[in-house]
Image (tube, rainbow, N blue to C red; front, side):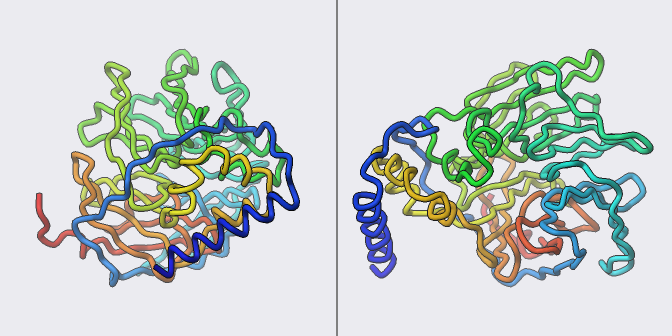
Length: 369
């Protein structure tokens, strides 16, 4: 009841402010309409006492990370740097070195031998090789990308990319625009899944109309690409043979950022924050209210999706997409991209300057199959 009163009071304040201060709320940059999302599911097992270690690497907002061929790590940063991190014994950090400036914020990294691919916000996608300047992918379907999200390299050398949106980006709407919130409210999303052919270099559009697609991973059998659709709280399955797109895991119990393979070959999803009843029960279901809220000062709108410490988690999925186990991260920054690392989960963060090291062991007790 207390939560309901808080939500009701918040809505009342928003409505009164909008009516008094902003009587005109015409066309908005997003397509206003009813947006359907699946109700949040509960995992079969909830772990609140996992061993979680913070790695203070001193890198501002270390969102993206990838394992290097020499046993080290590559980490992207909000300060436009690409950092090389050398771990020592027992999880200690031996060294952190700024390798180069990318000109933007790397929010997705993937290793390809000695080279790296980076989803560099808001520049697009870059290929980074030792001894040379970053090569920016500007050909074909990726020519106008200003909201890159993630990159994944296949064993064949083909490269897959997610584009969060082609219409609601800070380049098109203004740096201070609440474009993340607008992507949740958009009833006609414009996110994309792209692929660059290793042999021809051609960039092809595989899927469009996605709602803020983000992290990617291959399925266990290698026959499909799994793609996080952040603004619909689900994971999509793209069949690499047929090109069919279907829902793999729906109703995730938080706002998903990345999907990755853990140390035992299991699929994990990083959940940056809990889902919002205000957003789902009111704004997504009432387009007029959504348009009204979109007319409020940008700082007010930004606060609606403000990430907070201690509210994130990681979710273990069954091979059929069901939620098996959720590990809470009560002391951590919101988790971002993840990799398997020394038998544990290593996660980037959407705030702070530390990486997040999680022991997944408690999730492998007996649970229903």
